[in-house]
Image (tube, rainbow, N blue to C red; front, side, top):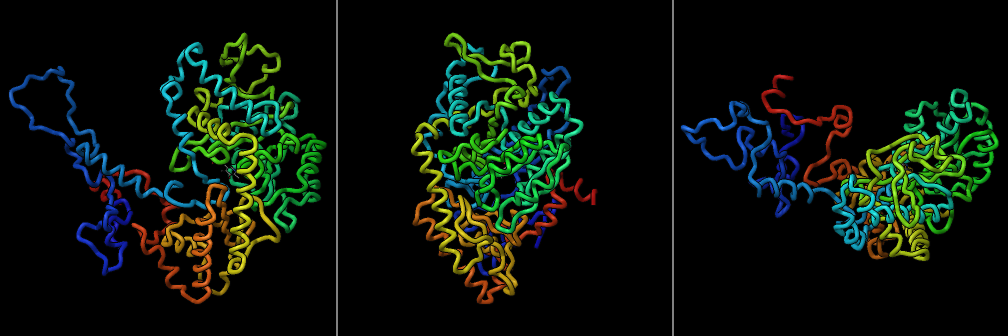
Length: 525
Ligand SMILES: *Cc1c(COP(=O)(O)O)cnc(C)c1O
């Protein structure tokens, strides 16, 4: 395979069967794309004219001596470059995106229409409050519905991702412990073995020591094992519910009670709220803090498609430590409480401070509220029910050829392990690559870690039965092919992608994140 000086395979022809080689490297109207730096001439811009002679220097000697090192592309060349790249980016608008834990659901176009209203889209974050009343009302209204849906008394709107919301919640817990004079003593945070990586990472970032809680063999937390680990040095627990195995933690109340009794706090990872929104209020489960991934549950585009937003709801115990700013309403006028000095409410005296420069992810707020209001209370509840129904449909249909990790029905995602691939020579990663050839973005692979060769499928409520059937038929045919001994074709997959199988270990261990000119790269070797 020919590589460029960055160690990346460059030519599409390398990635194609010999008999489908084309002169240009393009495949029909799917056009091959190099880096803009590799296409454009670094020694000029896309629109250079010849240097006029005999001109005096109007910049008084400040004229640049060297080129700025950007590729010289004409406007149409630059435009086409980025449009072609965007076509290579798989998106929920192109087909099903079954990534488990990510809730890749359809983002209704109504949301986009509302987010683009100039009053919201063109508003400057430093606009005076008097000129931003509508935007502040929108943040306040969304906050109201988030509190209503979760049954929690307070919400911090500014976190800009789920992981950022975790940071907000854990910082609030730390601040509460400090206020109690116990921050030095309570240093342990417990999290299940199946926890999302951001949970332990957040706890460690906040200076806690993470200890894992064993499972009970049915994919849930072992309550007795948890109780044994509790003590007066425990700051709290971080539990996802429904959990990352796609199962509801039935003992959740008992878990919350045990942790509270031991003097700790309960952080709930709310990434899987899509299974229970409108059905269960986390406040009723004893939760102290929970982030809500607006970009998952409330449909706003994410991943390659856009930013996230992770508002974090807080219990009465943690509310006083909520970050600034927050929206206030007085005499019919909305305002922003931005500093401690201006915080009028007595209980805001212990705020953990600011998490972001401004007020959060406004575009996501607009889309999420549009989604909520267009669905209504009954619609949100039905969305959750349909998400669970779709996952169970997939589970039931794939059961005959694939191996579900746990018995019984699931919540909004179906978890399989690699037992059905035993002795076939095909591994989870090969199966995922073969899915790409069938036109499917793979499901989440090798997560959660508690299951061998995990494949976590989350169809979401927005897939129709027709789409689900085609998806299941494709996976069933792959499973049959693997069992029939077609190992070689799995190892070779993907065959039809612009790039074939890459060395993922090398890509992860030695990522090349910066382009450098050929001479320099050669000199470095
Ligand atoms: C997505 C996810 C997170 C992190 O959310 P981001 O918005 O990606 O930062 C945390 N926990 C679980 C279970 C998730 O699925």
